[in-house]
Length: 423
Image (cartoon, rainbow, N blue to C red):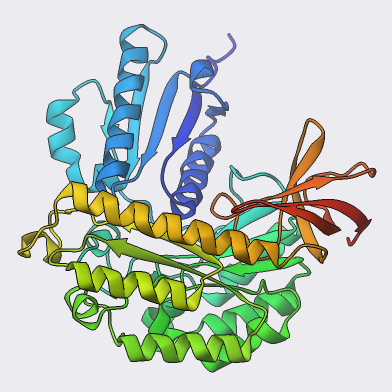
């Protein structure tokens, strides 16, 4: 008698790329047990959701997805539902009471030291999570309580992972963690990102290596020089600043950060790596943020002209130091401040993009669409930043690097024609 086939499993991964890496680990576990991995929930017996609970919007999205799966289960189209990740870690018992149709709540995923996994990204780029957890304890953030203290993987393990991804033919490696500048403090007693980066550069031939989530006060001259001097490290510096007003920065518990320090750091970056694109993120509507303090932030954005910028509306998260602070800002005002900054950044981005007219940029092709290709420059992280709409007489494939002559610009995106292959 032939043994019964193992159930089919499908994954819905919510939230950031760090969650996507965890989702790959989860699927690898199920695959190793003989479960069949399918792409669509409609094809599955077991639906798995890797949730996010970083801010209220993320929690609401996670709950909406769970309710949709519960309806599928009631209709007999799913046999089981399993919930992983941040929402499960924070609210396991409350969710179990409210959603008895869920079969299991698991919580956070441990760092995975093995190099083989089920890949959920397109085959030409990948994420390498080098550490988990955070030591910064910003007053608005629940991540340390969800993810725990800093935990780093050792350098040898990470270099092996990078080499294996290189053998699979990826063109871009994105190095990620809650704060990769703190990498190694827990296991080596000192920050070791630069050492790791040098070993990955030496041990692989990956075209682009991108660094995501750099805590401003731990960006060293050595790191900036590696970014400047290595053609394979993307000239893309992601430093979430959160605010510029000194009082708000202190309330946020942004360590070793002041307006003066931030201006000094940006000046150093633009001197040492003049071609770098700066990406940052800000929070508007933090408790007690005044009109004048918001105006100070807006003036700072106009002054610096960040190439890439994101804005979060302050989320009133329980179990954070900011939760009990006085002066909570009404939603209407928070929304207004968000809109004002995004309109300003739209103007800035449009102006910066126009400077590329007539220039030729290296572009990584991501996908083909009718009549054109979609790609990115080294100044654009996947799923986060702008695109390049590439017209080409050559047949291109995802993962190719091509030179593109820019002949039109949009507010956040570029348009051009491929002139030659690079790799």
